[in-house]
Image (tube, rainbow, N blue to C red; front, side, top):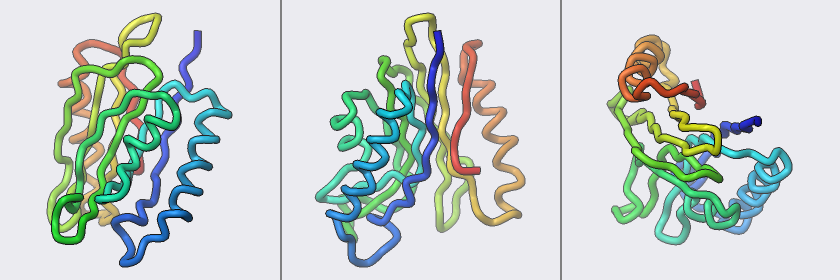
Length: 165
């Protein structure tokens, strides 16, 4: 048996721009959904997942693809003043359980990591997604923190880490 995992930074326009063209954004998301389908991805590890008052990307993708999803906020607040946020998400065709998260970096741009247990037909697997800092002086510590956190939370299961490093 095989397991296909796809990792994608969604380049969240819901958070990074003043005006959002939701039709163009939905076209991009539909293209990503087509890629997930064409590759028969079992697990999708996402970074820069947008949420706004009008659209929750993780929920839209999960619904469109028939997947389960877990999400962790990084920056902003969908219900706040600007009505936008972004985070990381894990989507899976198999059941997800035991979600865990940690903050790898703070400051102006929070850098969370998210993990969950995938109940695949051949056994459990721990999967993780992270979006590390762009600043080299912050980023140099984050891979070690991520590795130590995964080791501490995987519970002896095989673990896979994907993300924007």
